[in-house]
Length: 151
Image 1 (tube, one colour):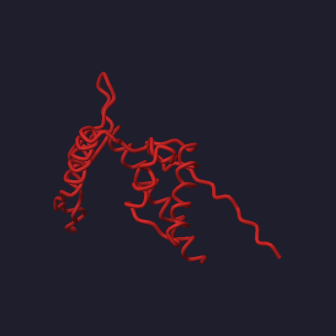
Image 2: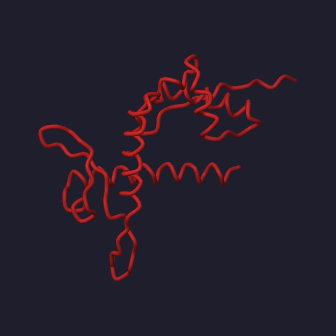
């Protein structure tokens, strides 16, 4: 009996910077790297593959070092901002929550900005955006929990 190998279907995560078509191409390449590395891979393996201009991953990366350095510092700023917590009392219970939240601000032009938790909760558009994001995370987590439970 011959076991038929199904082609995996990949798609972009909601809010991703890539579309579903690119997600399929990148997902297939990442899986190829995984197979070549014995069933798992590291981020360094992805970069090594992407260095080749013939790799479908090549165009995803920034290869100009000065531009890449500036983008990396932006990523560091995002990591720093997301690392700051504040203590809040919610219904009498002390809770640690992120201090700054990344939201979409539309004031003449659309841009991503950081606001305090209090600002996010008191601005209807920010509150809706964050609730939609939380609901999406919960739906994904619920699906993943079912997958683990059924295996």
